[in-house]
Image (tube, rainbow, N blue to C red; front, side, top):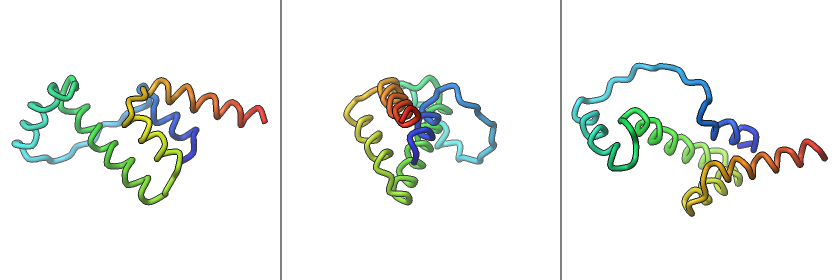
Amino acid sequence: MKAEVLKKRLDKNRPMTTITIRIPEDVIEDLKRVAPLLGFFGYQPLVRAYIGQGLRADIERLEGDAVSTLIASLKRHGVSDEIIREALSEVTERRSNS
């Protein structure tokens, strides 16, 4: 995945769309119970996080992108999204100025 695409994906204010998905009631209850324990304000952000994690893992596996692997590793080591965004901005700016 290109650095510019990753930078856009890290933007917390990117456009969202509404979908409808059927999920068993007991799963929703479990999500509601677990979400605050994991620091989420509701079950929907937790579902988005789960989907995003799975999607990033599949994209990494399918595309074998070193940048995605690096970002995932940085996140596992506690590097914040903001620092990763700043680093990606620096790399993007350097490429634009070259």
